[in-house]
Image (cartoon, rainbow, N blue to C red; front, side, top):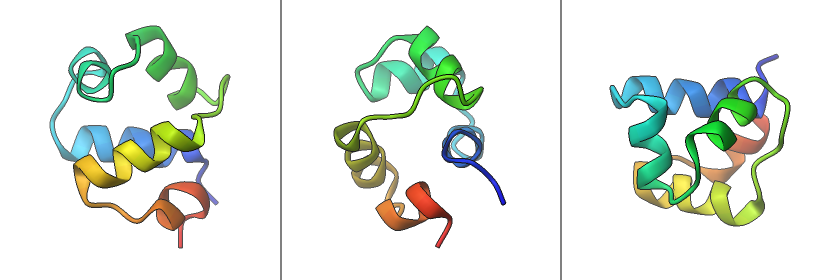
Length: 66
């Protein structure tokens, strides 16, 4: 089962964005995105909601892959 970080990385890559570009779109730092993708930090519920809205992805899919 993939992690939240892996799913967020998949969203970023499927939109052909660098970590810096993705971070700028969602108003966080690139190191924060790096840490999320490497499962060192968890995204806040507000960040999950923003990613969901910006990229038309279900929050449930980001959180638990469903």
